[in-house]
Image 1: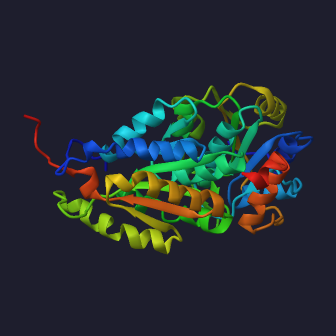
Image 2: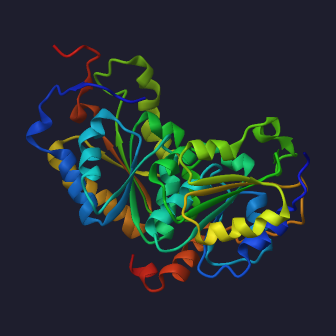
Image 3: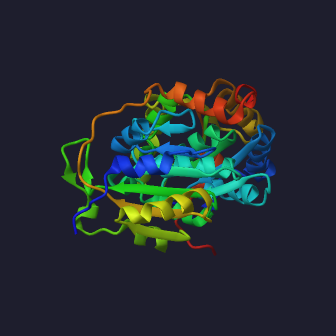
Length: 185
Length: 196
């Protein structure tokens, strides 16, 4: 499930979009950040680990993060959940917790299985991700451009926390870069 | 060795005079046991999302480090979220205790055997995951020390309580999830619950 080395086809490095998402989480007072890693989330995970105001919780499987977000909210804290699109499939039944209990669930999802994907095993879940989220009652904000990261993540977080909604930001594979499956030269 | 403890007695002993204890109850019989001990705004009972009880307890324990958090769940529910033991072990919250009422059965679906009936040892799994203390409880004489640990001991703590595979009368908690969340937050956070 975890993505390894990544080569950015287009250099999004000019705009530090993971730092922009981190800023959005911080300004929205997110205190618990859980994740199953993805190479696309590498920098954001590092930024969260380095942030003393955030408890960072590595998960064994993505649906654990939904329970964590519910518990955080019960205790008066805000949480965010980071994963790769393949993890959305693992979350399906646990999304009923968010549907029934109406607490903020903010998911940041790096996409696989989109344009340029070189691993065919990533295609089915990647392609099914938006519909799976919608069927689970999750609103979707799509992030295609690095320049939009702060605005999109902030809008998603506001909707989640102000409206106690389940909201996902799906971060396009083009923005993250395509895994090359080649050794570094 | 067949279990002698009654699940309702165990939960009643754990929740009597509970003070500021925060409780998460796993779906099914464990939630009914907590309701039978007395519905309480600071108990969050689950009606679904099987496998989530321990993770909700972890989120709560991290958010409220000065309060004690007790997860009460069943062996089937625990088995579905076994990975959460590893996730808790990596965090080591000192204020979290997990009690698994282990009747070795899926009590809500026809009393089929769970893995613990075939010898799977949840307490050893919890210990291997880094829980400070993880024990199997079989006798009523051990309940007082388990309760004392759950309220005061350094966590994370894990107790696998072997209970009889009986089905006590239903005692149902409220089932509106939004209501359960709201009343818990209001009881715990007061006015902060509405300001977020």
